[in-house]
Image 1 (cartoon, rainbow, N blue to C red):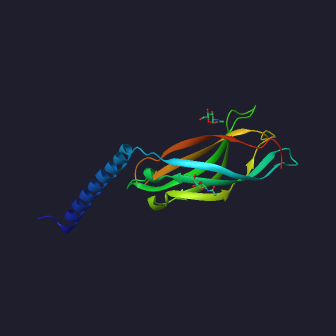
Image 2: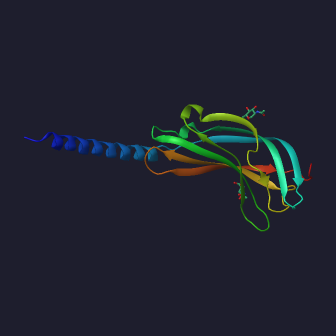
Image 3: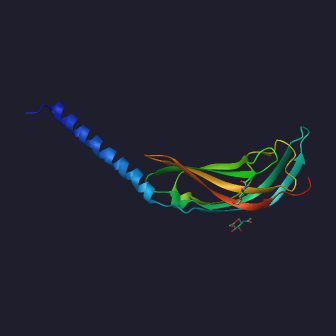
Length: 167
Ligand SMILES: *[C@@H]1O[C@H](CO)[C@@H](O)[C@H](O)[C@H]1NC(C)=O
Ligand SMILES: *[C@@H]1O[C@H](CO)[C@@H](O)[C@H](O)[C@H]1NC(C)=O
């Protein structure tokens, strides 16, 4: 006859095996989900645009960010980290990336949102390159699963331009 300890141990091993299989299925089912998030961002206003005493350009803007990230959520999704970056080219760098806003989306129910905000982080150029500058606004996201690998992707919105003059 098996001792109680032996049976408890066998039961635990069985439970752990089941759990491992469920985790594998969960992360596999994520690979079957092909998400199609959407986003629109409007620059509602340029609050001010200046050349700082240290020679760097800085701009403050009000943004209208709307996004539908619901398709990123599966039953294996813990949360989604999103950030909106201004991306532009300068003579010394082919890609300047400045995070303007970020957030954590904890559930599918609120993954469709609209936010009216001024840039949460400073939009400063290391130089005076921003007058008349064309830029992209890119929404980046990192999906953090309950189990399995994290994945990241982005949506590029182009066609934005800063004013020609400081104001
Ligand atoms: C913000 O964008 C959404 C979606 O593009 C639009 O419906 C809404 O009217 C905009 N809000 C403002 C204040 O422009
Ligand atoms: C902005 O977006 C356009 C179109 O997707 C792309 O060709 C360009 O390289 C982007 N610019 C930067 C600085 O990433």
